[in-house]
Length: 509
Ligand code: FAD
Ligand code: DLZ
Ligand code: SF4
Image (cartoon, rainbow, N blue to C red; front, top):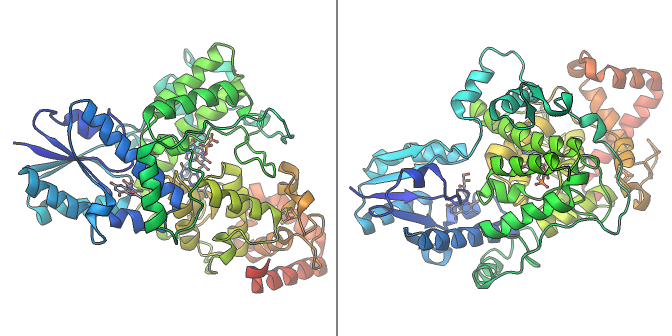
């Protein structure tokens, strides 16, 4: 019996569980660019080009390794195409009597696949995605019986389990976490590292033409396009990050600088999430760099924690809490997303910068996502579903399993605190401390009221006042409410009135 091995667009790893279980002589791999996946959110043009080009390169890699591959291009599959319609066609053409697939990373697709055996009339062998370091069963076992989930404890277990950054039973350097050292403000540096930029080859050029013509109305700038689209180039990007940027990753992890789009971040999530880089491999390389004395421990630990800790943790929460998780809205926020999220056309310099680079690069680093675009949406009471759709569309690394917990949970507090112990809400003071955006802004970060006052300030106090009953008992927020009480009623009322005026004219800010 021969099988059709469906490889999805974010499963571009030779050691994929479905490929390991398949027979190279008998089975046929199917990869398909389909309209349904290309349009279920209005993906950024660069994200579409990245996924299609990396898929085409991976099909070539499989062929050169002796696999028989059916590859369908978007211009062959048509506007009614979906993964199930292409699997149906593939079964008919090959005469295969079963489907083999590694589980998808999104709930909607897993639900759809569950209907395939009945709809397609063949068995569908859906394998666990073992590219992750924590299986579904292990995460469930970890979560079972805990009243509160905290990433830090999960992370320590993962360190013990993988042996990463461990000296025997003890954490390397005697501490699990060096975050206290990782909050420095960045200064301009002429030698600032930049991620590896790859010149598009003929395959990528074809894809750029396709995306340029079929998705011209989508958000984002298509060119210059410089992402790596092969394993070889993604590895080179990793090596370059470890040599040039990782040494200072820790120190400047929370910093932002006008015009510096990447700072000391790795820009590797895009490659890890699509399968071009293996997460354990990436962590091991970072650890080796520390053990060889090339990288300080606060950087290696901070970086490894993001991948071994946060990345695995949010994925665990996604599968534990879906399908209801994506619709949570504990704070009852309903305002539509301001139009400037899709244009960058705002007078707030910090948001203009983060949204502008999102448009150009399909990338923003974590603090930009959390403390600029995410923070503003939270303070302004934007509907978390709209915020979620935006993040899923605009970043090249976005798939629901990682985007939803970060947006719904960490950034918008829409899960009521399952993922974050307090909302990531801040006034302009935080942005001013961690960046230089305020210097070039039309607004004044020091003012709370008046036409020139930084919108984050009034919106922050209005947010805290609006949700006082929910948050004032939270020990991590006690200080904020003490400060609010010291402001006095009149000053608070004035700030809230300014907040309300800002919300009424939100699209003009
Ligand atoms: P670095 O700062 O260099 O970090 C190293 C690696 O750690 C990343 O490549 C990534 O694999 C991992 N990582 C870091 N933080 C997280 C995190 N919070 N959750 C999971 N993995 C993490 N990340 C995505 O991969 N896809 C998303 O769709 C996504 N959506 C987000 C939405 C919001 C609202 C927020 C606040 C964060 C989101 N993140 C998402 C997490 C994080 O912002 C990105 O992983 C990171 O910015 C990617 O850039 P980098 O590779 O330069 O990361
Ligand atoms: C993101 C994406 C896009 C844009 N296009 C395709 C596609 O045409 N074919 C495909 O197999 N996968 C694509 N993907 C990735 C899938 O959306 C991804 O596998 C699911 O969202 C599950 O994570
Ligand atoms: Fe952003 Fe306010 Fe600073 Fe302007 S003043 S850059 S809006 S924090």
